[in-house]
Length: 421
Ligand SMILES: [Zn+2]
Image 1 (cartoon, helix red, strand yellow):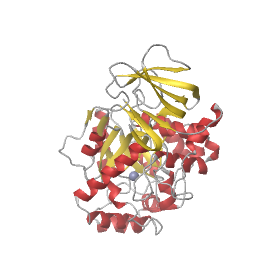
Image 2 (cartoon, helix red, strand yellow):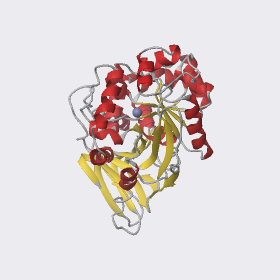
Image 3 (cartoon, protein in one colour):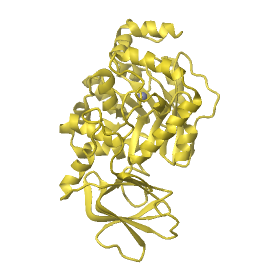
Image 4 (cartoon, helix red, strand yellow):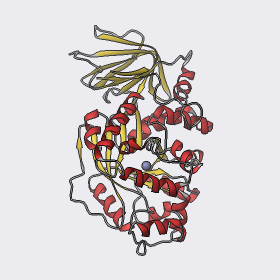
């Protein structure tokens, strides 16, 4: 059991702690899903999976672990992060424009060796687990983080990310190891040729695996895609990437991906800061998932996605923290609190759903994670909150954190506990 001032994540290794039979985890509140909360609830766990959810006094003689008057909830899902970039924490200027940020990131990452990156990644993984997260969508462009993520016991998808004119890869990057699946990601439509994106997407499609891509994030990306001009074209040429055969200009970033057949229900579109109603309808009809990273968007672009429009359109939504090169923490508690503060209309239930079942669905884990129901994996977290009635539980949990991006600095030193079995 890992504990940081009250938040505890309960995962496969510590939920049962050597106990042969079932173990009962009890708390003042148990969140089954965002709209179903049990007072004085318990979760019966055996062999790493949920056996029963109940209220009051459980039958039988199983060991009972009483976590307190706070709340047990499904472990959170960080659907988009770059653990590989943890060493850049606090080193990249986010306020000098996106173009400067990209160049600064590339230059400063080049000064670090693999050991520096791996050491910081380990710290990042601990932060992720300590903030109640049980699954990640990790984007790795250097291929360094597969082993650390695998060893950590986190579930999710480790994406090897590619960019440039041509996709060529001989490594075996597709498969599953326990709850961690490996797959492929294309970086973005303004850095990766349509030909390469189609090739990468087809490789994931053959295995029905998730595919991830950054989309419609910056003004630079949008003006390049829609006019083929601007500073981004110069930047690509300076990196030896020729875009003459990319079929540009296009009407929008979303329409571009739609036209080349990238949008479907196994695709995760990350950011989507620039989307009109036609784009949103297109995403909705395709069944693609949109992963929002509002803190990163705010830091790098001073703007936020149209979450309310996406909810109204019925798009499948999830949340991610993005990397420490643009945000202050990898805590999903921070991401939820920032999102709740900036989108009060969305409601805490919806935001919590994005941070749990929405992320699990995007990563292909919704039959195993995201809600607390018998048969699903026992990946639970406990947070020591005070709530006098069920209707206050979700609001208190979602707004628990005070991320540095909105007010005083409070990184992942919170009150979460990870329940593991
Ligand atoms: Zn990213």
